[in-house]
Length: 279
Image (cartoon, rainbow, N blue to C red; front, side, top):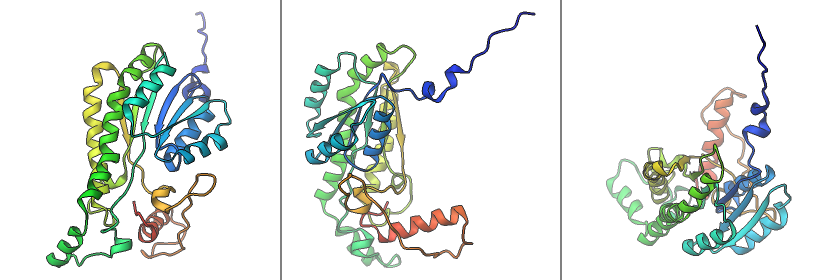
């Protein structure tokens, strides 16, 4: 019987995760998770457009991390969604392959446990006073950045994503929304009701967009990270646009030393107690 020629060529890492011909847009690409996503893409050959509120942060990323083999291009003033879409359209005649809606903020300054303290859970009056300390403009700003912007970015760049799919045989272009574990947890996320609610809303928006874009063959998925070193959790970043979390060692749950999950739980507990922003 004749033998069949076998090959594992298509299972090589360079084949499975090859993005050398891809073009991506990452919102909030100047720091934190957005920067890490940008670095991973450009290191593996993608062209990455990054947006953000601070032009100096985007310029710093280009200066420090634009080392190839891909390319990083800064697009400041992310709020101008239509302008951004037109600008990218003029530069990318073959469309784009990935939109990462990563930009997000937390504005629960008046209710965050680390700043305002925790209300008495048995006292209706204490809970009311704590919740009423929140300002409506804090909710509006949080939802504007964490949900509304993601909605309009997805809508504006859909034609470019569709074009990218058409010119890339065998590949379906995609949108990835970066939500948060706060969006699926019970409670107020350490006194951040607006932030947690906005992330829960982004998770549901992802479902809506995935259904709406299905027949256009554009995938829409969501990631809900836990604590990650960023300006949101650490409060600042260094010259390298990176943030660092240095919680003190402790064992509040009394778990055996060296237990992996015990260490993870303890670290999450310590960070959430000491961080300005919590989860």
